[in-house]
Amino acid sequence: MKVIILAGGLGTRISEETMNKPKPMVQIAGKPIIWHLMSTFAVQGYDEFVIAAGYKGEVIYDWANNLKTNWKIEVVDTGLDTQTGGRIKKCMDLNPGERVFATYGDGLGNVNLKELLLFHEMNKLLATVTAVRPPARFGVIQSVNGVVEHFGEKSQSDSGWINGGFFVLESKVSELVFADNEPFETGAIPRMVTNRQLSAYHHNGFWQPMDTLREKLELEKFALLEQPPWMKIR
Image (cartoon, rainbow, N blue to C red; front, side):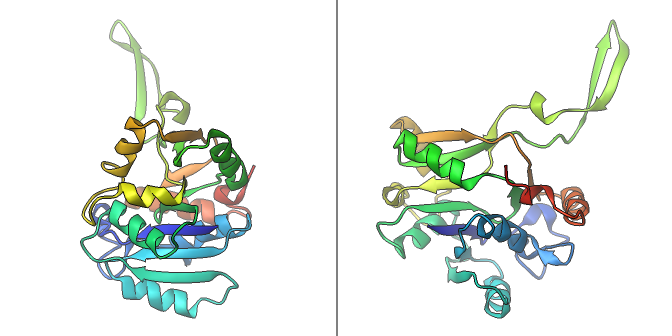
């Protein structure tokens, strides 16, 4: 199975790092975050990648062209203004009739891909999304009659479930994207929900995006461990 990685956005929320490179090329402990992401797929046997490039796509192309691995990498220019739905469709249409993985190029997680795929096959729907709990960002305050009794970090388990990427998509999903400028999250996904064609695989392990400089620094600390948490596949 091929792995589509969305890597064409502007990365405006971490603009201090993305003036001269796309967000997936932001370095985490000396390696682009996209390399860490691709490693989580490759270690589980999935090493054929289609990178959906856009903004500063030449940076990704040059990096991939000089990367010394056995991975099979195709960098596709999906357009500067194309949205996530359009990028996925363009990559899927290059491989018609194939089931694919697809994910965002700026988030890491130790998702067990074989379990995800088995879950998808059991449900027999057009697509499966990996549901994750968002990382805690704010302290939580518990008080009684105005007196604080607890002040501390909010637990991930206290939050709801959100879209963590790590999709499995059947080939017909491409037909549900109607335009290049259509986000996958507000176009094809709601259409599948309406038709009861989207399942959710709940991942309780590690997952963290890189939306802010703070999150980048947190990921860098993890990357320095002997085995980063996104490589601890359960």
